[in-house]
Length: 425
Image (tube, rainbow, N blue to C red; front, side):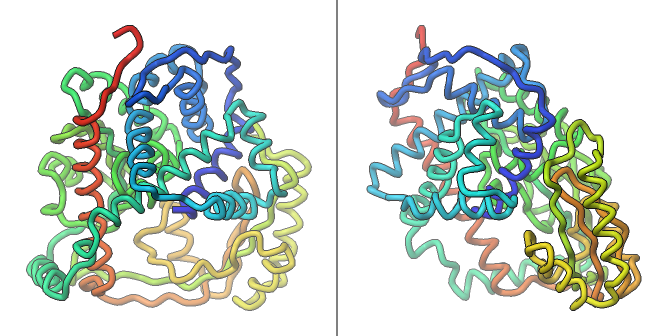
């Protein structure tokens, strides 16, 4: 979870440079009361700002008006989650929050305290992020507490799942990412659909799918940026299965109505179980941060100097140890070795093509991003038939399914038992 939130906040900081600032007077008027706990217009707007900064969306009054009902419902659910966390006397240690914030700052080459200053300078109350961190960590503890020993699959569970997968040898699997927007009341259907369309518009304009999923998806996969990995059609809702079969790689679906809400799905690729080949890549990278991020898409003299210096240094790199040493000279801002990389899961497609075609021990062209520039080198590639996942991977998938189901059921129960009073009602 902390890794996803690190990525989330890193992108927020970049987006904060390019997203238009939307000034609005503070409004502490009450929107809704959840079991006696207030949610105000300030809370709604802070969450809207978080979305706007992560997607580059201009937070105009019109967009804020269209997003507010769905954001309010998400805040209600998170308030219910936090109340359940407190009821169960689950304490998220301050050290966990501090470590997460520190990890975010280190991952973005920031000094202590710089994260808070940057967010608040962009109009986002730092406590909005802290509350989200605390609730997400604590809610996972609630789910594990509720499930108890039933959470861990038995050898029989794993064997049954493996048998089912063996029967699918030769079938197509789909690498998907998802965002789930719940509809808890039929009267809210139009609001949820409008919100989904707003999110889709931003995704198709380039907003990072993992970041939006980490903030706004109500599926358990949100903690992994919405990534489902490779799944078979029988693992999906029939409505979603019908859509993904027609989607090309990289495509983002329209809202898909399913029982309980709407799905937004991104197609990241396909494979044929047991027939296709999967390629694992070993690589090394050097990342050089800019003194200030790129603004308005224009590379300035300061950024150009960093890019030129790294390209020149890359001329002396002829092996993976050379690349690791170069990355160390830049302070190891990002790890030189990201670990084994499954080529089929690499995004965007252009980077997948680069890693698949770059000759071994040859330095890539510079990969320019908003906050810095990278060069990479491929150490080795190894291809093998796509086989069944390991027992550990099957176990993790079963656990994720159980946690997801329990999360939905528990939230439904909390909503039914709660007193939720909207302002003016």
